[in-house]
Image (tube, rainbow, N blue to C red; front, side):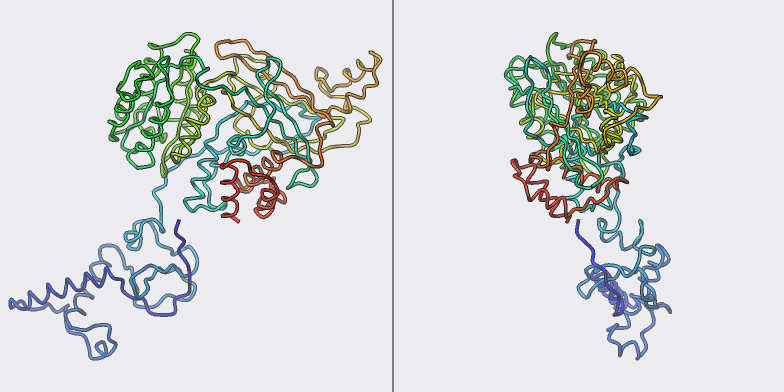
Length: 605
């Protein structure tokens, strides 16, 4: 975004190049009319000798044309210049001697408004046609362990918020001007890869935990939990039945929408095999089936179909969704990966258009065993709220594609993670030990929170995780001295209850484990084709505390700290760009995406 500088106006307002050009044309026309014997009206009288002396007017014709032009403009649009210079401090756009905009003077009240003359000359610095939409969530504060010992939420591997944040910053937004709701800290954390230990002993997850100092809150410690699934090459994956559901409505005509979409899906197509089946469904005012069940190795045919698409018409997204599920069911591969990949800016304006209507539609469709991934494209009118809803309720993930580099990351480097779900309805529940922790706060995941009873309810929807995905979770935790007495109203059926401690002693133990365990992480998940969940539990103790955290811990903390600033969090504490930059400078940034994050921080700082 080009910055418009400000200064106090010290010289008279000068007429810009375009105005001068119009005046010259008017003079020539007036001269022609005069040469043909036409008389000038009374309103086009010659200037006074005083006006001639100023040098502002060279001829009577020019003076007349100038007055007539300004009079017409004032009548049609309202005056864009005044005879009196603005008082010092007032907000007035003006031009320099070259006819270029130089800025505005003073505050915001009188700045160029939508529909003004100044805006008609230079659209971008003045206003924007931005109609992007984001969901807004209430930030959750600290919870008392005695009052609320369980923290329950759905797993999330979406990354859209970070790539969209990067796009906004590169477009010139500052941390103070980001759209409300556009920053979801959990998606910023989960965008990056970490050196997590993978699964062992046939389990689906490798679970990692560290506890260290909280950089922005010296009264709290920072808990980092990391889950990692097994990586898999696409050649090892089961055959895929893929339906490309592509938005080709008029709003997709920009270069960063349909053209980028075509190139991105062409990249994905190059990695498919003869075992895969590909269909293409498009939607604008209505839906259309472009390809139906083509072998994945027919690369040229699939790319040709992609490249033939053009953007026009309205956006009947629900019709496209209905058709896509029908095609996916026709080509369903039992035991395979059946998935719809929706690519859109989310600007649905025909049929079912509200978040609730779309949620109801997708909730019904997902029972077919077909997963839905959503790829967002474009700027200016993206509907982030609708795209996130579709992915969350459709048993899929949501990524935002702002460049071919991002397309390569999502659709090539992380292809199996994006396309192949290995655990569905993944729920996390952390039980804190009141003997060690007095208060806690989950960072992010505000729109993923679940009730305590939802954890054991297999009918309750939750997040999906692909092969090679990781999930990163951060908590601020406030520690306490060893507990001398438990609250009488404590929930009795929890692990860290009075009964648990007494049972340990009755069994001949000292009860020390009760005081050494800080918390227990419980995970519920289902295999993709199953409806009954399995349970895993992992205790976290003092052994996980470190005074010298590793690079992953420092980096994740820096991402969260920037997220707190970007989301204008009430719990940012001592967070600062300076500290984020210092933390990143102290560690080894081992991949290009982390290095890019560092560059963004330096730019912001």
